[in-house]
Image 1 (cartoon, rainbow, N blue to C red):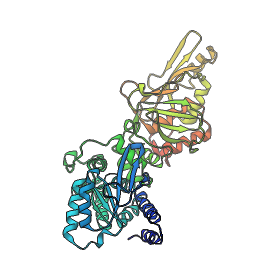
Image 2 (image 1 turned 90 degrees about the horizontal axis):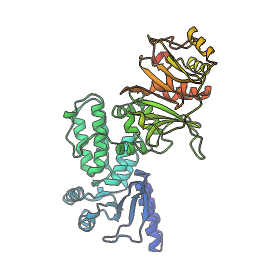
Image 3 (image 1 turned 90 degrees about the vertical axis):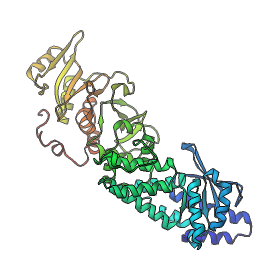
Image 4 (image 1 turned 45 degrees about the vertical axis):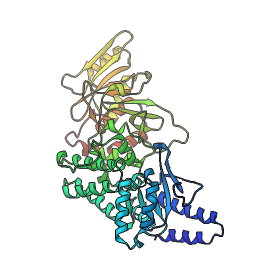
Length: 476
């Protein structure tokens, strides 16, 4: 028995009034459950040790989910008898004594089978301690803890929880290498201890890691829940308040798209979202980016820039601005009003500071528009003929431009809409799109540009990212 829980029971015994003893016990059980799933809301009822009325009710308001909890003695025979009355509610049964003290093997086996079949999770303080102690090791184990409270089934004292944890860890490590045996053992353990809904979240993540590292999907172990990783699965994972290594997020990122990220539910700020996007920038793609001025809101986090999911879009949030990403279509951009057009010196300054090549510009006159384009995709800014046109037109503003990314692909920049996107079905990796094109859309301060580069580029330099283009951009 966990020392804290033992002390709580000893404190309960000191109360003269039954109501005092009951309150202490219920609070102790609440603490045990909350240590496994901090997101749960625990509501006390007016009952204690009632045949069919729960002692506590576990609630997740955002999911419209509830689960009753009954406090009971650890006797397997008594639990089997009680389960016939309450199993239809798929409850949690929390025993005040350690389940391991039950010496009769046959009742324990019968209890395990009955609880698993009935979708009832029977645990004690050693079981909750075992998962609470490891849940912070990785988001997967944190997700496993939440899943047990929401949909655990069978008997789970400390030894049983440790077996499940070890099988899960080995399974995810094996999936990253395409090893079928540990993956199959993990599926068996997960599905043996969780209902179909909760098990599916973990087995779909396991499959995502498996397929993300090139293993054949057809050879992945058979699971009760089919389908690919969903936004709901990813939302659960991102909500876990535990740290994952960069390697872990890289594994998950192989199964994630910008479109999928735009559909998740995630609080702001989200350290897990920052870690996942950062680890996935070498593969996440977008149709384009739109910059919208959005003032800082009261009580908003002051960590800038940071990744957020808002208005059903993945976005980079800066101070007083948001850069929205469209995953596949320009229609995904949120609406915006036309901005003031920048002039030629402004665009030249932005492109020069950011080392961005511009192969085409459209200059907006009073009643004419002039387009200057390099046939070979070379730099046009600074050319004598363009300078002469700008001078003749009285330094007229620019309406459009075409920026060339280091891989040679063109991005059309619409300055009135402060939007950059590709033509047809073309998409771009987020890193070069945000590094080389986003700064063309506004006069970011040096501090803001440094922040964008820090978040999007990480510790790399431009030369590290694109060593084949040491002089990329136009000269000062």
